[in-house]
Image (tube, rainbow, N blue to C red; front, side, top):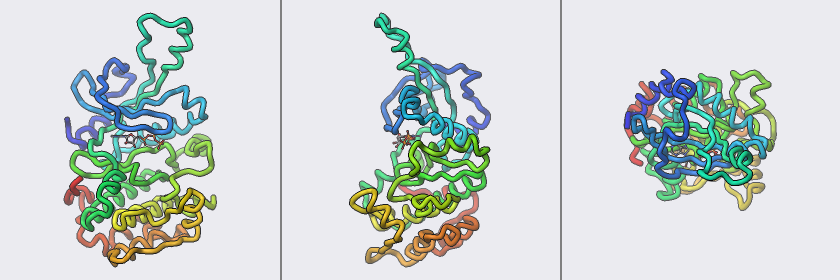
Length: 324
Ligand code: ATP
């Protein structure tokens, strides 16, 4: 399989532009299931024409329409179409299709066919699972791994800011590990694109008012007092804490109790938590978004002593690799 940068290049050239190639499900062999989303199943699929593998998100149109989340799906596609960064799982193609109809159609053929209608999003495949699984399996990470992966997330957030995108659901489940052990961000359904006009942007909001995941959600999202790039910095603080403590900083017995811990900023560090990490996390987890380190630019985060050993030139992922 080609290296991720080569695949990114291919995407930029729209090598697999669906309208040009007229892709259908018959162009792919499904290898296995990779995961489940709320409205989709993600499968590993091999493109028959050249053997390349993709993570294909199969989104049931019926489910999307029933749950009134058409905008959510459109949002992810529109935003991903614009993003090209080694720390983001590249979108290579999209198409819509019905699965092949059964050989002898049942009586309600038309309905059956409509039921099978799906949207397909072909993403760069990340073979080493989620950061979440690493944390589950390993508990606390060695400091060097935490520094490296945190640095990679800083680069991703810097790029997103340059592209005027707030992810809004940054969490270990949405950080996948590629073949070289580097992180790639997925799941832009909840993302907010500042570049989109407000009418198109309503798409960034799910049917519910709460966007994100309890343990990583920022207080301003909970209090509905405005969202900014700094909301992703809050999530970064939570992830760095979790990588070094083996648990997220705010976790109650229920979502409601977790929200209470977040809004009250009930932040305690376990014994032995590295001093520089403690200072960084403390500065990222500020209730007031504008006071968070990095609110004025990610270089302020890069300069923190926690990242003293990181060579940032050419991107943190170029410097060294974290073993998966
Ligand atoms: P949600 O309901 O959280 O919004 P979703 O429908 O947007 O989910 P994703 O979170 O994008 O779906 O993907 C679901 C799962 O599929 C992921 O947690 C991951 O395990 C797997 N997956 C997604 N993209 C890839 C990829 N590019 N490579 C490998 N596995 C992937």
